[in-house]
Length: 177
Image 1 (spheres, one colour):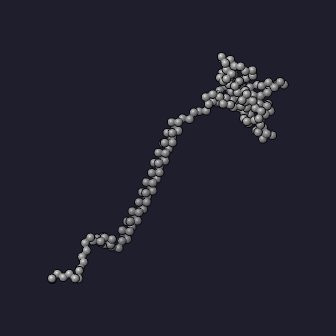
Image 2: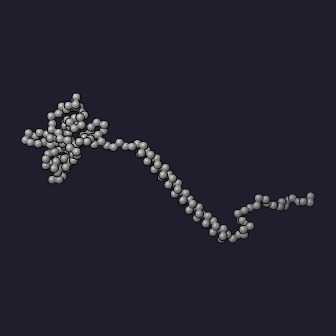
Image 3: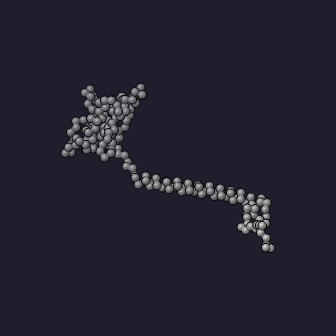
């Protein structure tokens, strides 16, 4: 039973009259829309305005009520619920007092957040790289110092150093000529 209730009380139920009733609700509840002419609404439905209209699948199914949430002007939505009452199936509408308007995105805050987080992430990566290179350099220097201590040559002689001048003897050259 619950599955059937959830299936038939969604916003896209076949047979709902949300689009047909939305102009009347917009006029009577908010005083706007295509039916609002000279401050009067050309609408014949009974509309009660309440603080909050909630979708309640169990009770809405039992009372044959239909929940509607439709687009209004300026990006806002208005919410109402309608049900058939009496033997003549008159429509009774419950409209929410306030429209639901999404909060606009603060572009400055979002862009500032992206820029600052990018800078912070870059500085963090640079800091981690600096710490890594310091540790690596310290290990390399300690390794170099150990090798210097274990070296088998005298401090004055470096086996890698080659003197810039060399002396060669030419056997064909004689000084006594």
